[in-house]
Length: 461
Image (cartoon, rainbow, N blue to C red; front, top):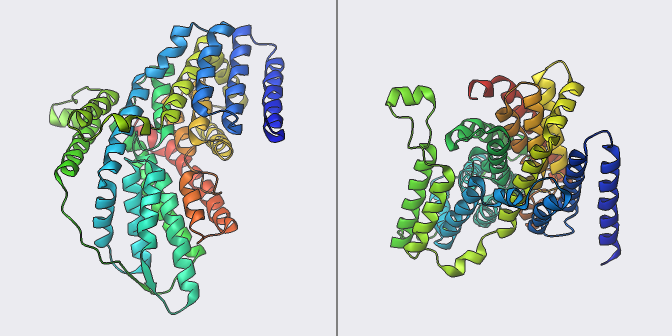
């Protein structure tokens, strides 16, 4: 082990010991659970171990520390939420394997106009739409490759440079905010849904999440577009698109697309809002999102679209991380730590002001996600958000969704998200330029989310 890893390990261990000593007034199970939370968060931030292995440590530590039995610690690893992400990974894998993502993206881009600003807006909405269903990393890589094949007719060299900067940053940021719109779009969304099921007994449906997330995605895409062209102004210029024959979809592509559309339809119609249910006389089919996702995956394997060689391609590290996060949340609930944290934060914030509560939760999650992955950040802060909301007698759904979305608003640095790293790797944008645009968008994105949580979301929950 080199010096840097040793220093990180010493820091994590010291933080755990400090957390245990600091919580001396609490009961022993709460102290041990808090120490486990700090230990897991430290390993996730420092990445001393693969995140999936840290998840295993969470499960193994609980019976050893006497927090809860091994069976209960392991149960979240195959919860409906973990099944949902596993099934959605297989769907996305089939989409990419059959080159459906490229086929759809190219068809959309070829129908966009040649005006530089409008074209970038079209690229951003296309990226956001694909990222609602596919990995933001794969979407950003695909759209970046497609975008870089475009050439601009320009009179000034500055126009060309600014167009490239706005285009690559717009695609990267749109890949991140697109995932906010759907339950399967990005891991923090599913962490929130899983924690709400485990800790609050609330089943957050696919359609409900769209009502929360889609408006933010649309608002942020437009905001990002405006800000980027303010920071990197471009004159009235046009763009040339590469000429390419667009082949018709083959049989496997059509079948994969049909399965995907069917899954999306079943996700959305699982449970309809009361006004729509009353109008249609049908409240939904009642199948869980995880069951739909896993059934779709089974169909894809049965029909030969996927095979045994595709199973190792799933991001199992993230799947295990989900299970570990849910297991940690269950441990916090079983020990009584979530209730104690909720009561303490509610008393500290005081006054029952939702604006103050949501501001503290939102910006805490945003700051933490700058140094940790968005999934790890959600695993740490969503159970805290749920507990403080229950203690403050307000909707835990709004707080959990707020924190999950704020965990995805990291636009500032290349290391923040894979799409940011992809944008930086093009060589079209400098770190200081990304930081300038990203800091402004981080703050504005969190403020917009908090504002919607206070004004619009109470009518949904």
